[in-house]
Image 1 (cartoon, rainbow, N blue to C red):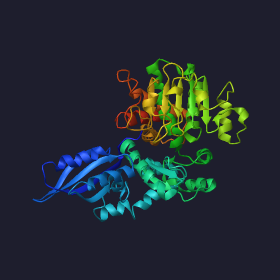
Image 2: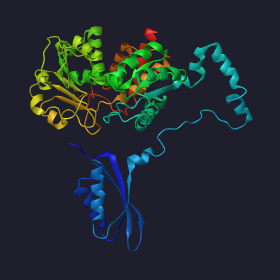
Image 3: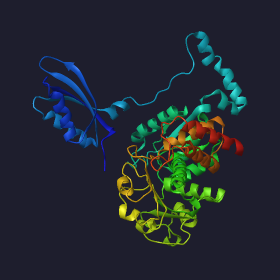
Image 4: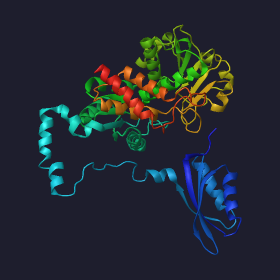
Length: 468
């Protein structure tokens, strides 16, 4: 199922004969091994040779090597250099700190730093709330991880997690004008993480927990929310839940179903799956629009009370889902289901299982990079299909949520975050897709839609103000 994409984009610099057919030979060679050329640039021209940069997308690192080897095997062609464009983007990191004020002379320096800065320090000491007005706390978020559950890579540690956290910070700035900084902690001890975040909190207006493995992430978030007077948001839980609830609202509009009439299967009961279930149930109990029944499925099958799970999160899930106490595996859960939401593992079922679902089923296969079912297989029977991938329609991406959520929280100078704010964010995302644009291939807006972050921020700010 993998297709060439920009995540494995390379530029191959080759020296080739100056013949009329050289360009065609080079491009044909890339095409024969499945590469997709995105640029072809002549960088040098001589009477006896040309030097060309061929930029193309590949499917994997091995596929990229195949492309360069194939080019090098052509008669008269020499591969000078192969550049991995993803690694080039990361050289030296992706973010930096810049000053917002000019420091041109002694006058500027005396106000930005000593002696003038002492007056500002004294003002904050006398009124600590002024830190939100007079320092970076007003617009700064810590992106905190221990590197224990990074993307689909697992427990790779804090240093290896840093490129992801840098990327997160860049997205905060791009889409929400929020200044964010990576805080990668060299510990996976729950108490040390909680205490460390507690100690650094005075600098920040919010804490974004990221890529911390379940079940520790639940306790870390809950206890930090109790201890801190700033919002604590675990994006793997709540960012995902917001986007899924938004997408599901619009998907059900497409198929003409009410959430209250749906049987929903949630596959994967870690951080994301549990948060999705909690937010769906909150919508049900809050405005009577939520699902009547949810079946949660993990590696041991359908979650139910008689399984005897010792994990506190699974016990909560068992208590609040599966009203009829059914048991079985994922394939059993799918029979008669209106909605499948997967945040688990690749290739768990096929089109034959989708055929057993209720008429016009909705399939959200969000495991990344390889979803629970091939989207093309799902489309054989599903009315609406969504993934977490950018190369298929209906990408459910947390970038739709977290920049606007924190923009709204910071603007409201919020001290906490509530389910009402999460649901407000979900509705704001869904509402960006108006009735004229809504269809089975467009249930959520693009992450580059400039209307999304301001809409989410406004909704969260209003919800925060209402509960203040």
